[in-house]
Image (tube, rainbow, N blue to C red):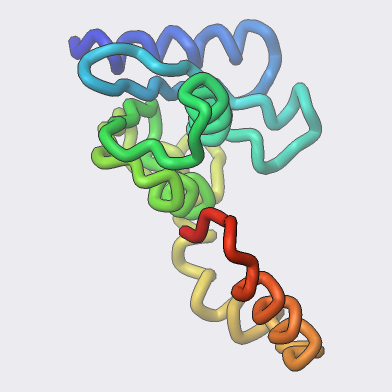
Length: 151
């Protein structure tokens, strides 16, 4: 067994044992060294965004004092849900290693597949552009700031 995936599994077990949430643990590694570990805290925090990958990303960014995790890899017990997958992309993590796939996750009662399939239709059904001109002014104001980090 891969040592980093073993750590992700142990992290997930820790979260389950503490009643924090589902069986999702993650480990972020850079240059062969563990940067952070995270597990699901959805139940503990009443926070639907506190998945194992998100927890590990937040901790890695804090530890490395950057929002850019280029050069890092993530080991996670389940294939990342759409939210976590996008967070991994935003963080510039180079590689994802996952244990269980989306079908495995569905068998234990999670809705990842349904979310993946419904995103295109949900964009049509629930998204409505509103006050674009006022928001464009805000964007333009931001664009004019000289000392900023753009991503």
